[in-house]
Image (cartoon, rainbow, N blue to C red):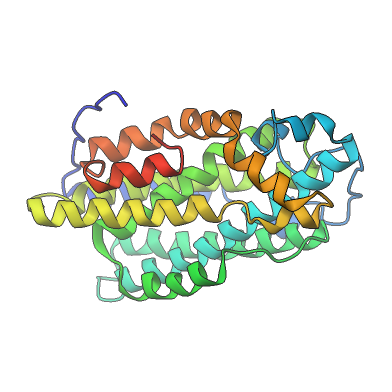
Length: 303
């Protein structure tokens, strides 16, 4: 990966100015998914659950053998899996934000935007849950072990690592959903859900990016190593959780073959690597890529 320019760390005094701008943006452009999404609209039989090029089987021999009906069914399950992981992480994010502002001045714009973000994430969580329900999909979520580890993360992670992890997870969803929302081959529900999430998450990503810079000011070498590894571990587990292996059996495919072809799929690996370039450049510029963390990023195809 090309070495990024060092991160220009925002001054602590800029925190309130950033929060003021983000609050103004929230006031101008926020969405209620219960109104914006037509939850009663028919689910077309010939529309994919997500952009087919984002399917883990796209480009494989198995994909070429599948009928349109099978491809549509698989991508609905994959979309439900992605949404369920988004929902899981939104809940962790809300916990982190509320813990972070608990002892801060509630009159500050910084705290008020954090609370505004929590309100956004509440709506997003319901939206993701409703989308899976509308497609009649299982409630996937991360693997039970990862779900339990999330409880630990939710209770102890804080500071730069928490904001970097949140920003990274949101960027991962964002890089997929920017394609979903523009693709007319995709289910209308998926497109609208993706559009709402992308537009509102742009503020959240900005908020988190700047906090990472502030929280890492003056970080010691030892602390930076810890922050690197912790962030990479969270990104690793989020990426590994995106598509649960049982989506293949649930979509009517032979699971062993589907899992093997998805695991070896060069197209999907390239798609993740290319789409994740902006995220990895930011993490690198922040000093959060190096040592053991590189191996974890490579294992989930981000490097």
